[in-house]
Image 1: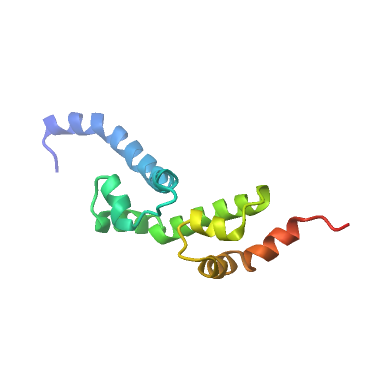
Image 2 (image 1 turned 90 degrees about the vertical axis):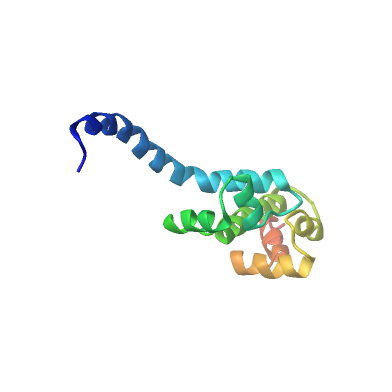
Length: 132
């Protein structure tokens, strides 16, 4: 229940609040991707991303979970997109791509890429080459 004087004030603020809530949901993953891009070659942790976004790691985790997302899912999706772009559009060695994306070594990157894409990065790159 609201007092009559509060209702008018609440109604003036409500539309902006609703829009802000709707917009913030779509912007958070994009903001995290922006932070990941800016931090390259260092790969941000959840704690570091939360600090950049001026919230606690738990709050960031909770906000992402409410959208059906996780920090790891966003980070892995971003890493996959960058890897596919590098494999498709450059001759950059797989080892260099792995390092750029923050993997400790080439083997770890190969396993992660195979899990994400269904096959290792070398196979992906070869599949792009037209047969003679």
